[in-house]
Length: 274
Image (tube, rainbow, N blue to C red):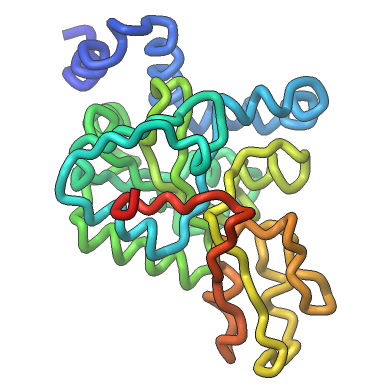
């Protein structure tokens, strides 16, 4: 058969509605690392010409570890509508979680396309059909189906490593949520686009970090590890940069940092609450 089963299924579910978007999705999903390698080269130019437009079509919502765990432990399909305050983009304001317990871990395309990638690399979690089937069928050496427990373990490892959990949305995937990325600041293209080039790729988690200076040891680890450069050398949180990812809290030895709900940062992507 010329087309694989997963390609046919994806077309039946999505391609018939928007063929152009389906073709884009196919290229992106089939050759993601090559796609992102090209995008990385043109990031500075994209930032100068149409950074906002880029973010409107390819973006993420930062998740705390607790919120990421809620998504991978859902036991039912859920549609979420009109999420303007959660995902402030022209696309992906509606979320469809289909077969949320169908999870595939795949090689991170950002790491694969980075000049000096870090490891481990099997850290991206594709959620729900038909994308899980597509990845498994087209990238059998770079993906594997994992259990709910394995997904939770992966999230915990990422949290301890100081990586950012992000729920990614992309218009080539027909305006829906499809993957939880565990992003390191040295390889992630989304973080690079946002921090280095000012492209607003990520929406805040809905929380902000707070430092208890009575407990803080002034060790500087949080300043060094923050992926958004949101902690000043004076151990003050730069609120307009803080995305509420919780990375600083995860590495703080005396537990002097905590996340607090921040209405200025939007509404958390809490699938149970909304």
